[in-house]
Image (cartoon, rainbow, N blue to C red; front, side, top):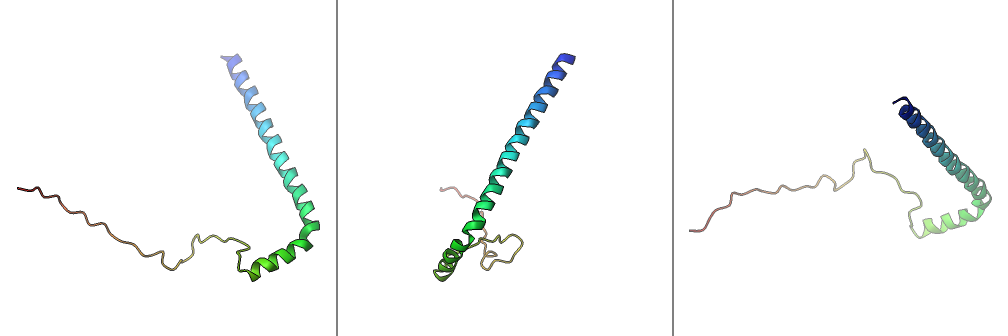
Length: 86
């Protein structure tokens, strides 16, 4: 039983290390993209202006917790009792 517990603890440590390495990789990749995008920010401004002129949404917002017109429309399904034919 003790051997099994040590094995489980060792596997848990390996899993934690793998997750940590994965998250570190994602973080480094994201930081590298941020650095690359800073140089391209000037070129993106023209694209953003064009998208605004064409009324293409630039950012998407959530409607969570906001009143949305037309969202309060609902209906009720009337349940009727079935009648047999004679």
